[in-house]
Length: 85
Image 1 (spheres, helix red, strand yellow):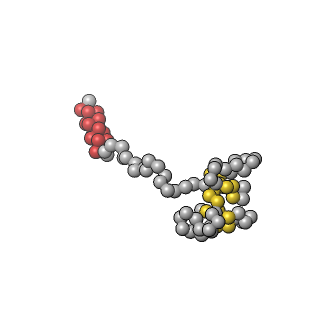
Image 2 (tube, rainbow, N blue to C red):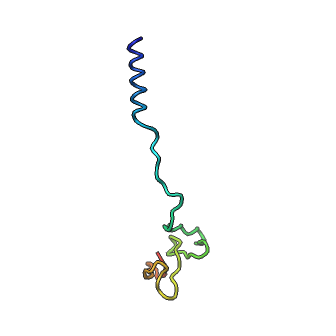
Image 3 (cartoon, rainbow, N blue to C red):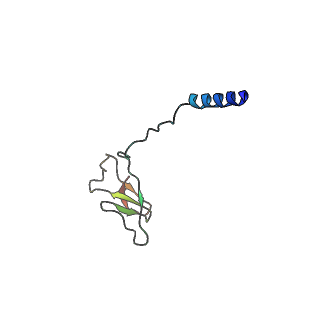
């Protein structure tokens, strides 16, 4: 009985020494990071303000100036669609 009590006390002591659950630092939002949504099949629909690039992902269209809002140049897809990344 004494041995059992020692094992239980030692186990509880070891568990409390490990600390509580670790808090993960996750942001509440993704901030300025934008992910490309897949174009909806079969009509290749994308949300407003975006275009379907090569039947794959929805991206922002390239403005007539050729410069995206981020300041980078527009990209040209494999099939010639101009878009911002």
